[in-house]
Image (cartoon, rainbow, N blue to C red):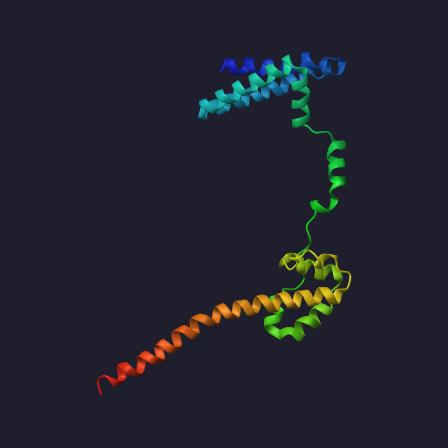
Length: 199
């Protein structure tokens, strides 16, 4: 385990010597404390899983040695481990829409349709704003042609919602109706034959 302590010290020494400069020299005590803390963590891990602790120590040693040897690698590693704030801000500014998802729909159109049919559904949808209608479209995947989310007329969006609800409900009813139709004739046909045989 003393080997692990040496590896951690090498990491700290590599960071200080590679970067250089008076600012880094002042941070030497902080880095020493961080290295000591990391070494203690490895020692604790070594008590329960010595193989993992040894592997981590080797990985840290190799990475630190390479960073000390190659300035380009050290800079790339530094960027990868701690990206700067302006970089994060610029990426979020480029894609503001993708970072936020639409709110869930304020009503479930399928439940409303089941309760009050098409007229009631149209009435409830007519009370909603265009954005609330778009939330319903997005939540239930009703924009298959990628047009409905662009429409500015709420009535067109309502028509799309009603059309999709009716279509999916009809498909569901067709599947639910098939087993009932197939079992009833068999039960009806087999019943009389069994009753007729004893007489």
